[in-house]
Image (cartoon, rainbow, N blue to C red; front, top):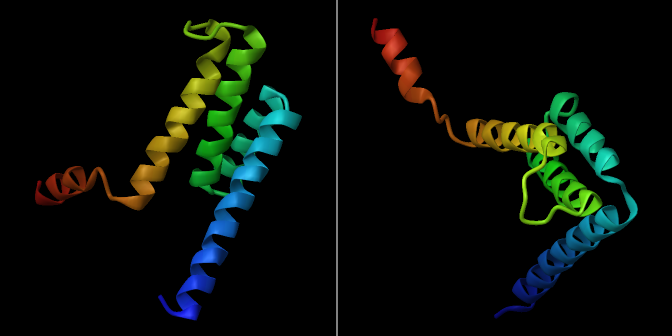
Length: 109
């Protein structure tokens, strides 16, 4: 492995580590509602669906702990799960044109 490859590999590992540290810090210092609001901001205003999905995921995790309902479903989680699912679906729609077959069938009519 060349020196440039080693440096590039170390740099990417550092970025991953800093992302993990940032997520851990957010999970420890923010409430579920704050994480949810951060996700909503990323989703609606910034159109950053990757980050929105991460924030919603953390919000769900934190809310489950706050409600002390691990392994159960609670009605207070519905908006958290719905937003998380919406961010994941939108992220996939942006990445791959999942519904391309619908567009093709409409164009053929």
